[in-house]
Image (cartoon, rainbow, N blue to C red):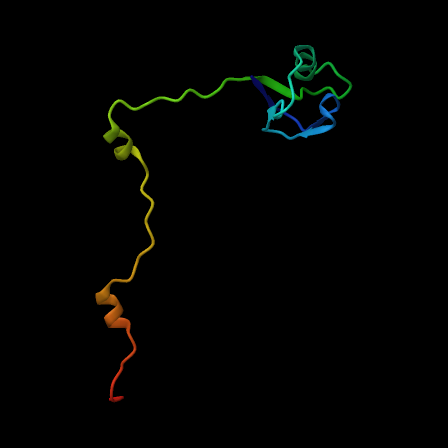
Length: 99
């Protein structure tokens, strides 16, 4: 369970770990103390801003029922063009007697 960081802060209870806006609190290797989370979510502190938002729910993964559906809705990314034998022959430098 994690919380979205709303404003940058240094967490003194996590070895002075820097948390930046948009990151998730707590970082790997640290635990979220419920009392500390409640304090960081409130604006009633000496800075008058909240540092943490609501709890971030893990994203649920879904499996498409029809595998073709994923192909139809996926965006296409053009692959780089490769040189074919025909275009290579047309662009090749002339050889031979120099005429």
